[in-house]
Length: 244
Image (cartoon, rainbow, N blue to C red; front, side, top):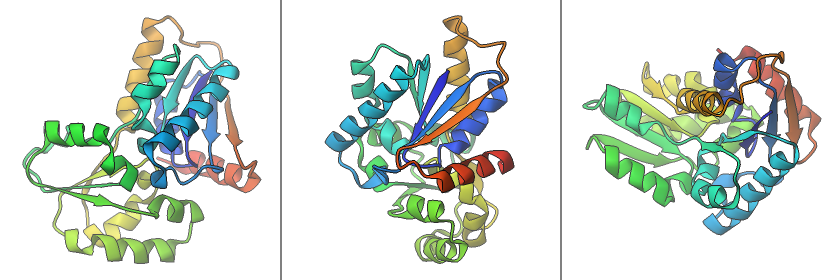
């Protein structure tokens, strides 16, 4: 079984990519709404929260764990040091801009915790195209989970309007791919980058190398929310069904 961790339901965008390349695997998705939002937590809090989530999934016999949250991924080195199980962590797909659209005007949007992390700073310095703006979007993940499109549109108009003219947008939170159409209302037909595809490839490679691929299952997906929210579970499976 593959464990997937997020502060809420945003990691469904990562799970969807995993299902494309590993359709026969069993998945346990861990939605940590008790501790959401992760974006306002400091590093020490995140270490405890994410470590507890990983241990829970280990206890459920997961063979590999995917941290499908950019904020939680900022403490992945600490988490890997505590556990022997393979742990794959998403990160903002800024390298993809460097590889494919180096000269283009770019905007990175992410949680404040992600942007403030040393992990992100190292990534940015390594692949800086000197034509990039960085925007912390405090509260955006929570608005996405709330599902009020008018409030979302108002927020995005206020935050993004001055960035009209950018060509590439790096979605530095797994919730953000859920609102591409809302973002386009403000910025136009931009090119989006997120790390979900890369994560799915890494997971498949690790399982292949370790001879851990499941070839007999039908891709069962289980969902747990730390607040035991049935409504959140309903939204999660609806999103998973409708995501392209």
